[in-house]
Image (cartoon, rainbow, N blue to C red; front, side, top):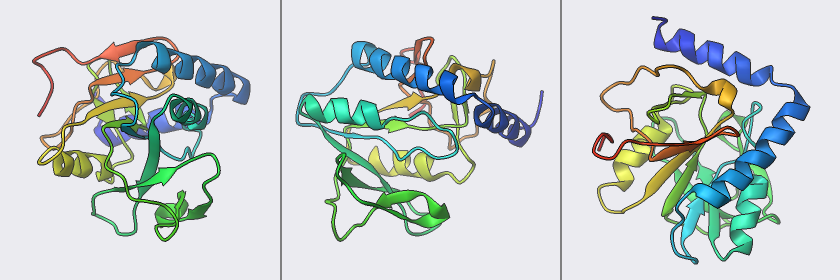
Amino acid sequence: MSSKNELRQAAFKRRLALPPALCADACARITARFLDEVPLPPAGAVISGYVPVNNEVDVFPLMTALIERGYRCAVPHNVERDYVLEFLEWTPQTKLYNGLYNIPQPDPREAESLLPDLLIVPMVAFDAQCNRMGYGSGYFDRTFAHLRVFHKFSAVGIAFEAQKETEVPIDRHDYRLDGVVSEAAFYRAVPGNKKE
């Protein structure tokens, strides 16, 4: 089996190589599948998405649709390495500024900090058991560990089917998602087999 880093690099390159037309079609299908199949919290709850970079699935249309359905949306904000993520409110009118790693994010002086009830999570790779491989910085895993001490939430990954692996190697600190949505399917974690 390839090392975790080799799998990460290969999956990252596959995603970067996806043609724009294929990505646009897949993003539309992912948005529709998410809205049709993912169990959502009650209207008024907070759902965090993310600002897409490096050919990640564009979730802005999904977040816009969720706002239209009565949810508040947020995106991650980070200022320091090895910290947990904060989530700042996002609307289609939110101005974004380059933050850590040049990832666009809202200005904390202009956007309210929110506590997400459902997190929409980007990734580099995933498997059918809803194990996620990120970029290796551990931000989401640290954030999940922090949140679950005092707040009940669910976390659903978003990815292109081309990012799916037969098996994603996991470490002790890795958090298994509740589900993953691709253009092809909504993968659900097996009840009783979710890492807590």
